[in-house]
Length: 251
Length: 345
Image (cartoon, rainbow over all chains, first blue to last red; front, side, top):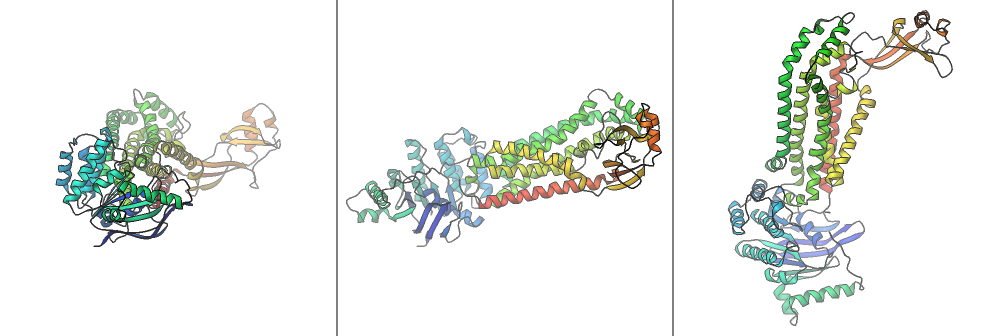
């Protein structure tokens, strides 16, 4: 199987501060990948590099065989839902679907309409008047109806209440079950990831600690639950870093 | 992308079109009466040496109702509209997207960010240029009888002439250049400052500063002036003063016979070509001004004058518009550069 995301010694610095260091990854296609790690570990940076929103300081990254964000064709292959699931407050749900249709050659209008109907979003409602959960669903709909080969989501559920979070993951799981799409989503809620993900990357202190299929990771650490496994890697990384507190970094 | 840009900015473009239509209606309603008054006033056939002053004064005094007010309101509009375009169309164009994080949504559709910016700049920029252009066309057309009358009698209380600091920027094609520049300045401020309200304030301050600098400092250098040395006529002397060294300072109106010329400098010089600095003539130590000026007339002084003739009006208009157009393109270049190297905040 080909890799959806392949990186070699990928690093990103903001000034002197490393946000991502020496990241070598190869994520096979067809997985729903969970990216976990504490705040400031570099999750957003890695995802932004993959979407082409950032360019690396050093190292290389290839997504679906191309340079991220390198042109319309590459942009069309990657769907991206940003951290705060931004939408245009002054535009209605229908306007957002028009936006998607006008800006994406591969736009799947029936899929978008069907999702909006099933989620009971009012097409005439302005995004600014919707709840956070509805906005997240709208942003997800835009990214899905673009029919990407890879869907990248940066903590899409972090700001949602438990019910909205559950609905969001449910609709994501339904979509990935029915379509040929790879997904990378970040979260610090391991329990949520376990529901939808079959592949896990643990990122601590701007370094990748482990990456692999969840099934295999659990098989090799027989005594642990996924939650314990993540915690074990995180504390081991913290200890290795000389007990330096993990840098707090909010975007 | 054109659809999205139109959807996002249609409210402001429609508002501008409605305002323009309302003004056009007002101007069309008042124009016939203005033209009738102008044609019957005798101003078009007046003789500059004899009766222009009285005819122009009478014509201007006879303007009634909303017309005189409208004349000055239109001048105000000509300066306000480019500023409004820069502040309310330019500055928020990208800054709002940055503030609301919607650029992350926009940049992840199947459209490159360069194209995204290009379409936004083109659609809204063209609307800005069209608004200013149509406004200037309307106002220049409507005001022409009054502008013409005022220029025939330059010493009237309303001392406006086409090459003057006020009218030059409020007529012809320069407002198009101002609108393009103000818009580009606003967008650039938004891209660099990344917050709409501070960007709006910066745009207003920056645009005002550039316009004042252009009118006061740069414009006079855009076209080579005409230099003339003419004999000083006693009739043009309007004041006598002291120079710093205690000599006699003669103040005289520049003897440029053409109407509408823009006098850049005017100096009284002696036979050798040096600025005249006295000494006081005997007659000028007395009280009689007429005797004094007559005695100065005997000194064979001359005036050295530099001026832009009214015939250079369109050359100057084109050059100034071009300068603002080029500045707008340079600012657009800064926006493209900044957008493509921008990191996620």
